[in-house]
Length: 378
Ligand code: GLN
Image (cartoon, rainbow, N blue to C red; front, side, top):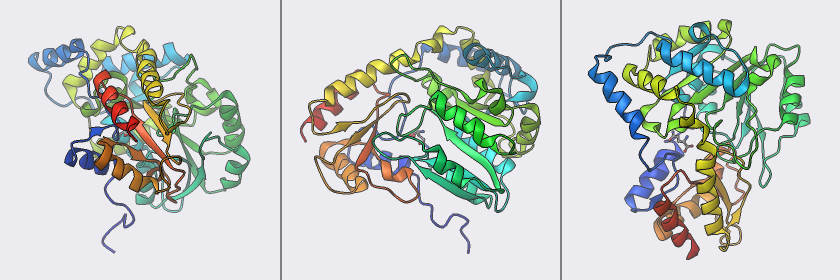
């Protein structure tokens, strides 16, 4: 057959955004801010462009940015990564994930993922001949039963993919989850790919627990993060992968032929901007206000509000409103109420329909107000 991904269509994020645009609906589907990033950051970009930094960056990334990344990780988690040999700047989180999977997954290697899962993990594993074993986290709590997960592990398990905080459920991993994971991988050579792109968006004083805080996990992990999420610049497509030297060396063998390097002036601008930690230390409270505004606004409606511990996504149940499947419900909501969302079933291989949709609240106050108004009419 011609197609290597015969079961894959266009991602739900493009689909729902297109439907939103066609219907002039408020787009709370695809996760991106509808407000401007800080002008100071924008000024840094023009500065470096004008200064002449317009050619290739070194393959692994610009040194000033890698140093700032290392400093941020050390300050937040007390973990040390060597900027030159253990941090690689990537074209966003998704490229880091793709490259990590491409680097390590061969035919018939097994990869464990937790669903609901961001949609790029599984097709990428499949592309390289890997086999996905999935644990389904279910509404309303999305808890992980580690006994069941243990049953998924075999001699050919090569990698476990984590997403913490989780998109779309907004769940964060607890100390107990990390301890169970440590037990699970002990005496194995299982790698961990930890997608932590929402690490700085965690609410109610809770703590994000990064894989790198646990030496037993750090030594086998590829940690992925995103500047798009950190600084409201998803269109800049910059992120990074932090991993021990031996893993980074392999990662870069693929990275160099995938993108070779990423945008030079933007890397320098990010480095300059990151020198001031206040530029990201308030991110949780910034988004918590938006989360709380949305939750308060929807509290009187027939939607049910699931917990949201982190990320900029709120999960809503709609079983009191409709018994349609979530995809049809979300489509009709876009057409009729002019609010676009993402149906949770698109985050499950088996299209589990728990009557849950995801709303992105990384939006201006007025956008959220209009969305609440429209949703209240249901
Ligand atoms: N990560 C974002 C989301 O979950 C968007 C990703 C994308 O559009 N590919 O909505």
